[in-house]
Image (cartoon, rainbow, N blue to C red; front, top):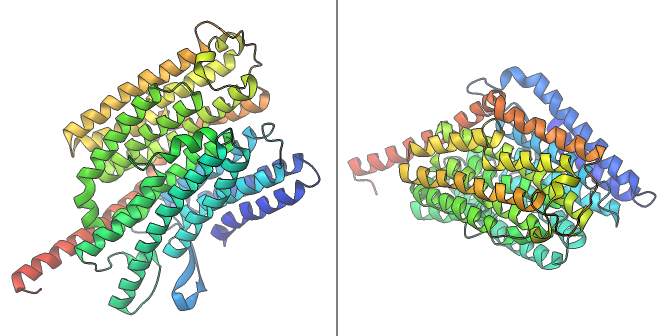
Length: 510
């Protein structure tokens, strides 16, 4: 039941936060914080009890909860956690705490309803990382959408309604395509075996014609590519990130983008290994285009928050490249980038929110000289900018280098062009710091430095990024067996498909 409670606690916490907002603006904040602290305690219990099992070969799940939901349709509440999902739900909880903390004074209107939407978004993301029944996965996938829409549409900035509607249309339309693919698998598997089920483990290896497999794969791919995002499905991202409140931007960049990567790792390639393998050269090319395109557009921005938003397109390109490279080094690198980018981009959005709260502008042409008046803020900004550009000793460097080494083994030209992306990230990251914190203070800004609460948030995030950079082995060990299992699933299914094709040729079977 512990996996079920991990999802129920933020749901209940969100409801209590909404109700308590009737009496005090402070109560919803504390209710949300306490709920996430209890959820973190459950994660630590799982980690303590199953730490020795994380690296055991041949065991697919550390913990699993499976109960029938709609038995006639083969739908179960089937939740499972392995090393990969453990890392992702821990990051979800950590960034959720940071999102609550950064909204402590920034949100003053309808505080209870704000925290309700924030907590339900986190519950939906957690459910996505734990669900292995495809119907339940789709349920949580769509569950994220509505509270995020409200977070952007109610508490966002000037163009919040336009951005919220655009985000809703992109994600809803692509989600419906994924539903088509899920239902197609469900009916074909049922027709082939007589068992109608949404269970992930049973749907693996479903016999599909190449045309059908390609169609279903693209249904899943578009849904995940929109969330990641992949060029050209990225156009919702700059608007949504820019107009969302700080907590919404932290969730969007730090977590929502990661569900697209997780979907590709867990579902897309294992369910459709042959067509995914055929598609991989195109996917890797799109990844490199995204790395370079996102970096170039980031350098062209004058809105500080929009600049940070475009960096996500570039960095998530490394994740996309690592996934479709599909060798051990690249996959380990993709997981490291997912974690390190989630923390560093979350910190940058929090920092942008802190600056905007003080000077009421995000226009970098009006900034400059802030380091002299707020040196702690400048130091923190510099550190996370260095993390973003991949400075050795910080988590992003480990992930991106592993991806490049893995990609080099598959395609040297694509690895070289992706490496150019590291150089371009240096340019826009340092330019961002120069424009914001150095140079003349043209507007005569005199801003207060980071408060105790803000220092505590940044200290925690700095500690994680530095730990990932200096001692990544525990993370790599935690994810290794999960990634090995995924690789073995794909290898087994590819061997089976090629063997069936060879037998058909030899025997003259149609």
